[in-house]
Length: 620
Image (tube, rainbow, N blue to C red; front, side, top):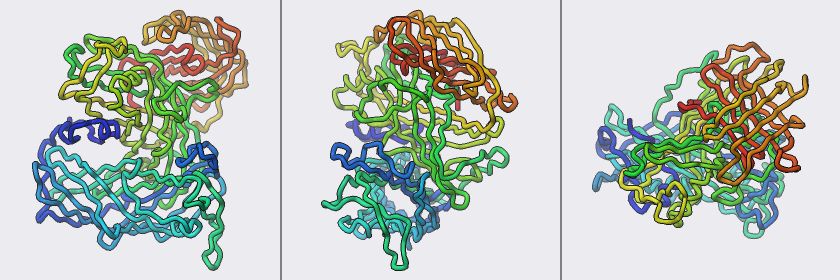
């Protein structure tokens, strides 16, 4: 099976070789269309333009030009998407060494449906007159490798126009509206070509970019129009220093094939925020290490189960479609310093557990795994309410951190930049047990690793490291399952056991926690016999004194009645036997048939953590 071929900025920025030289060939090379020119209608369901402005009040110079402060106005991002109709024209040039340069234009422009830009609080703006125009002085272009199907040197540039952009330019007269370029200064753009039976090539594009406005435009304060237009089309506005735009564009000539979800469709909230609880038994991050290093003896899988929440912002539906933005959040009630990230200023997301990376001949300890969202290219997708699936899947950029990654960055001496991983995959909502709403996402990416340094098991910068030979590559993955319940909890979870963690250290626990958090006293005790060798933290006993939060949900296959559950996650304050300071304990426990799991963290996994990683990688 051919591996996924969407490269992250990790590979494109770091590799000194042509990217296409590192990719496998297609089973059959692509053939250019007759005459090397084609004009194809686009599929409206899968083609859309949109934006997700982050409207903030960040006046300090330290927060700009990126608007990085957390003072988000109107309760969330301003989401809108508009579905497109029209044609694309693609002109291919005669190939040289199997590489064909191409140019793309849009005859008669692309026109979009009317839409609504909305935030969870107060802000709603009618977005009408949507149109995509080519720039007046150049074409969108790239280079297609006919052997691998990969596109390089892609520069997709178009003009977005609608009522909101016109109003935005009107209240910012010092701004010269630019054409939107994908990927631009920071973003992602990818085109996939596929052979058709008529000899032409289908095209599927997805692009994002990041346009920060800073706290002024040529000395004028940045303003955003309010949806209060009068008869003369005058738009009142407010100052929004730190405003940033996040345009995205999807264009495809491939017909939609996803069937309607029928009675498996979930009940989708509108224009609101929701926090879904991760089911840690089915949520993990990791990497399939396909390193052709002889000393390793073959393939290695690194994986850590994750604990946390998914924040989902549901937009305003227009017809059968709804824009949605997603962000990872740490476990509820977490009040400890976050672990260090490769890039400064990144907000904490899910937390993982110390684990082992095992090759046939060598074993690594991987400590301190966690993730964070990319604040400049966050996940935004278009949900088809009839199918339950995101049109074209979901692109989600996140930062990973753990001690092995830190060592990789350090030992490659700047050849690998600490940028976010770019994951793609199908994403969907569905109805779960007892009318719950379930989100599922198995994301992957593909990273060539030829000629890069891989640390030895002691992570020393000495000669214990290895250089990955030709044929080496990584396949990071990002799998998650989150649930939002709607029933009333009636049960109390109880369990106790003495186990050995997947890291190889003994631990024991006992808990008695009501799912409603109040119907009976909550209790939890945990003893970590082995401590945390990588940090020098000693073993000890945690005793919960106050329950901070609790969430009970079900696995997808659960047949339990309403109010009964097979998964619980809770957080509580308590004491640690080695000192007199207050501490925080977080627990994720599953007794679902075929998916038993326990994961326990003290102080966000910085003081102690233990879990029983499933031996077979669970799919969300």
